[in-house]
Length: 236
Ligand code: C5P
Image (cartoon, rainbow, N blue to C red; front, top):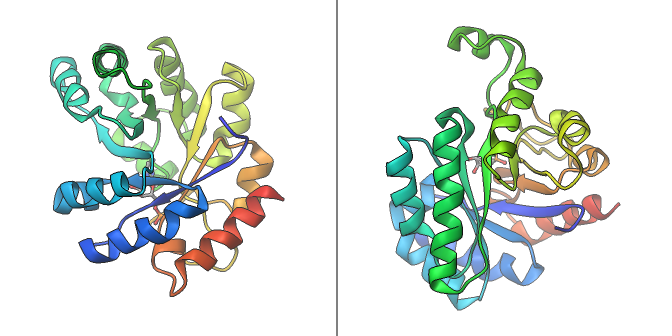
C-alpha cells in the first residue's frame, strides 16, 4: 500500500455526473469509492463506467448484518475491479470473520486479487456526545482501538477511522495494519456532518494509508483541480 493514497467518494445523485467524474478522475490514479448513494441509485451504470476506465474501486457499503447474510453479500459483491470492501466492526467478530472468508474464497473462485476488507470503527460523523447516547463507554479513540482489535483478529486488512486515531492504531497494531480515513477537509472547506475532521496534511503526517475525500472534490466546480491540490498536499 502506498504511504498516502487519495480515495475520492463518488457521492453524487446524478448518474451522468458520476460517470463524468469517473472519466475525469480515474486518469489521476486515485482510488474511486462507490458508496450508498451511487450504488443504490445507479450501481450498474457506475460499475460500467469504472470498468471502461479499467479503474479499481473501493466498495463502501459498510455491511452490518448476521454473519451468514454478510457472507452472502460479500460473495455477490466481489468481482474484478473491487479492491476494497467495508463492513461495520460493530457487527462483531463472527461477522467480520465471515466477510474476510467470503472475500478470500470468492476471489479465489474468480482468480482475481483478494479485495481488502476494512472495518468501520467509529463513524467520523460521531463525537463524544453521540457515543454516550449510544451507550458506548469512552471516547471515539478508545472505541476505535477496541473495535480495531476485533478487526485485526478477524484478519481484516485495516480499519476505517479518523486521522486522529491513526497514530494510536499504528502503535497498537503495527504499521502494516491499514487505516482508511474519511473526514478530510482542506483548510477553509465546509465540514458538513463530519465532526472529527483533519486536513490532507494532517492525514499525511499521521501516516493514514487511504485518505478519503468526497464533497471537497466532487462538489468543486473544478474537481480535477481540487483533487490535484489535495494530491500535492498529500505528497508534501
Ligand atoms: O464528502 P465527504 O468527504 O465527507 O465524504 C466522506 C465519505 O467517506 C462518504 O462517502 C462517507 O460515506 C464515507 N465514510 C465516512 N465515515 C466513515 C466511513 C465512510 O465519512 N466512517
